[in-house]
Image (tube, rainbow, N blue to C red; front, side):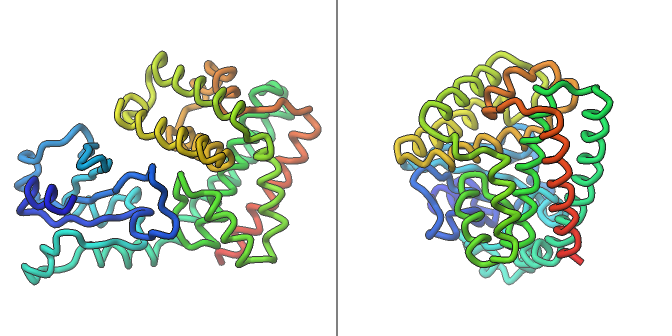
Amino acid sequence: MVEFLKRSYPENESILVGCRTEPSISYECCEYDIIVLQKEMEKSNIKKSKKNYNICKVNEKTLEIYFLTKEELIYNADIKFRNYIDVTNSVFKSNSENYFERKRHYNKENLKAITKRKSLKFALDCTKVNKLIINGTLDQRLSSLYLKTMSFNVLELFIQLFHKDSPRPAHLKYQVNQIKENNLRIKESVDIVLDYLQLERSNVSTITRSEKSLFFLLNHTKHLNHHMHNHKVSEMLSSKLNYFKNQSMYVDANLLIHSFMGRQNLDANYIKNYNRLLNQILDIQIKEKNILLKEIETLFNINKNIIKNIY
């Protein structure tokens, strides 16, 4: 992998980020997340797919490569690594400023601010959905979908605040378990959110059904973000789901599907038009209106306590 990076991008610094920097939580199915730091003048010369992104295989290892300029590295809010491994050591050879270290400190210093913004947005979204349910604008099927996606959003907020790390899609169960072990005072709230996600339903049948519906969506619908149409990304997702099923890690697979769908940022019209298919993907169980309102209120109050913890 190192030789491939040095040969392919000899003038650029490269680092490894993600779960592969922490061997204790990486799985065989995990890709190697690589950031290649390029000079502005070289931007057009590096072969890559749209949006500075590429996936390739090297000796049966999957490399997910992001090509970024120094400005993109520092100010891109989606680049959230806490740890990294320098795989080419170019920064030390040239005695130049270590932009990776600068970004790592930036991520650490701004994690609470990012969590605060997400928490405040969740409070607004929660209030909006609550009003739509009361007014009868959302039926029970659509309301149940929103409840589940909001429950997952709260789970990610817990991870960001109490695990002090960004949610890792394939390792959410591990991160949640760490939170519960290390923060007993919030264990009850975490368990409530997990109960709303109905993770106890995770088994080979439900995951297989969700997977089939998800890939039907990928292959037959339009207007999703570029990741949804990237064949190699679909292959990676399928590989991880198969790994989890083979290892009987059904909760991990369930959370991975929730994470993947959450990152698509689907708008309200899309959710309404594909409600039935999305319900199959997320294994939604339809709930009565009074239960929906009660559970949304609980999520709102849990989120309110998250905001207090941030301050």
